Image 1 (cartoon, helix red, strand yellow):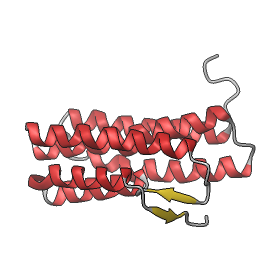
Image 2 (cartoon, rainbow, N blue to C red):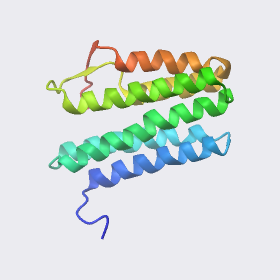
Image 3 (tube, rainbow, N blue to C red):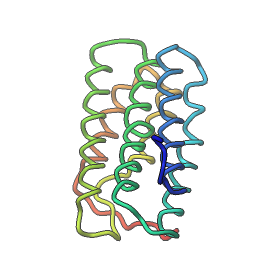
Image 4 (cartoon, rainbow, N blue to C red):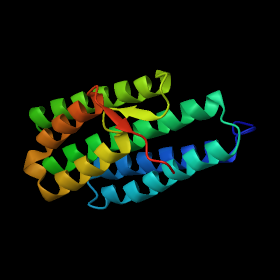
Length: 163
């Protein structure tokens, strides 16, 4: 069976991915409720982290978490920003830049030696910022995407919150 051997954290990562995929699908369909996926994705991401720390983290779980985050906190916010702003080359290029920086940030996080710090702004925080700002000021969606992308990829250190 496809899902055999998955632990609680893995299932929560898959729920995070499903929430993000729902946001993307709704954005493509032009649904005004596309951003409603975000609280679910954040919740599932938080819960999968707690479950992974409680149990034994696995290599598969680490990859699932990162891939789910790339859907929910990178691809979905980009799709929603383009959807609310309307298709235009500037916003599309900003969305592509946001996706590249977001995936790069997640890959760096997976390979960094220091585990008690973040480098750059974490992708869930940028997702919240991009979506909220794009919904309030859609004409500036390209700017929110670009600024958030730079914040994710920037080399500054942030202390990890204790959860």
